[in-house]
Length: 356
Ligand code: SF4
Ligand code: SF4
Image: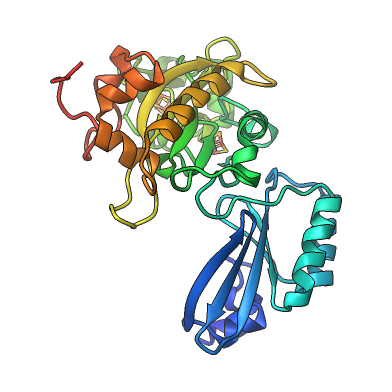
């Protein structure tokens, strides 16, 4: 099959169609790269060709007007080439050095925030939140705004011991990168889905609803032509609500946020690491989530103060010990930390033998 010629509306078009000509020409043949300032780096090919990257933050959910503005800037300075990173940074790719500074000047004039490259905070990857998804326990975008405002200077100027990658997922189905980020947030429900027995038979299918439950908590209730949920098995994930609208789970009083720490994707020095539970529950307190921001500040500042250069958050925690992490951050160690959901893998804490 000639993939490049494929014409289909199923799946994304082949990525090579969108590479800037310099990248296409030097594909797989790059020599080095250099970070020139917090939001600017240059990649140098073996041929001597160069491409500059200017990174700006984005709120991820963008208006059509903002997208047009970004596209216009890319047309003006980058022959139309820009990209979104997996953490929703916007990167303008410039192959003509003379256009780099004018691009930076225009981005500054238009109040785009430039930074996020190297050992600092990157844009925060997040999920849909209340604006779009049905099973959200927290509003991802607004929580991201509150956190990014707090740590913006670590995006634009200040350095951290190594990259600090934040992520927000607004429910435990977690279509974000929470499991593999240095500091991350998971929206959590804490009550059973409410079964609307009258509507179940009209809007839901029994087999798909039962199959949607990862813990087999759902069984038929033939008398009601509906289902039952075993409270001992339910983990409040909301997955059943994804396939059955008669099982709403959102709860303004009890939903909230958990914080996990120490994950990473990179293979440098240590293999990729899974995040571990640091804070089991904090209340949903929009629009600025002060409790969540305060807890994050404790983790972040302890990491800045205690980590050696090049240590990611998870590497720092492994070196000082999981017990010490709670001591230096001042976060309470609760019964929820006794066993977390990563028990099947190597964790910071795999026994009850603590060294307080
Ligand atoms: Fe929806 Fe959950 Fe993904 Fe948020 S994390 S967008 S609530 S599936
Ligand atoms: Fe099962 Fe999750 Fe629904 Fe509970 S919330 S019944 S665990 S699918």
